[in-house]
Amino acid sequence: MDHIEIYCPRCHWEPDGKPHWQCSCGTKWDTFSTGARCPGCGKVWGYTQCVSRIKGGCASRSPHMDWYHGLTDIVDKLKEEVQADQLIESTQTK
Image (tube, rainbow, N blue to C red; front, side, top):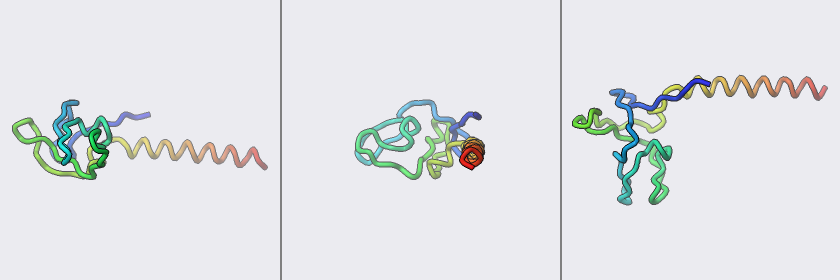
């Protein structure tokens, strides 16, 4: 399958695995290591803010899922595989 790239949809800054994000509970973490779920309190964040310009980003907020690039191709391939499996199953049950 294709690979997924993670980068800011506005400026293309790529996360480096460091804890740039802080939850309202005070926990600092790498939001991409948990799919935007705070490991401290469990809150799931719908939006992710890019790092500041000083750190190379743009400081813009975007929907968290918009940071993941390549998902469409992967989902389309999975759908094709499921449809092929269903076709095989339907011909075997006849």
